Image (cartoon, rainbow, N blue to C red; front, side, top):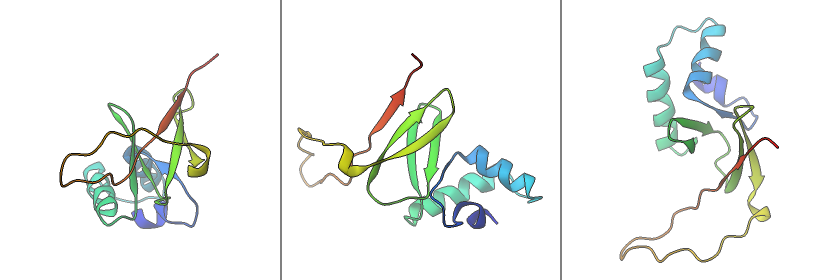
Length: 112
């Protein structure tokens, strides 16, 4: 049921709470803990990508290709930015024996 909510062919960004509420509206009987556990398993299997937009706000992204995000806090929405639209330079050298796996960029929007 959770896989059907997430992987319907459309790219989406959902919090665990949004997945939980969608499941409940569809008459699914699942606990919030099960939703979190499933989302983390999907993330571990590289089916989802976690996007942290604040200390207590995490979205799960079904688009796992390289890209960045814009976060609109007023709307509570996360939007994709094509990776080609942002240039990143001057990354610090990683510690010995480590390499940079990815760079996450979240552009936050404010009201005028």
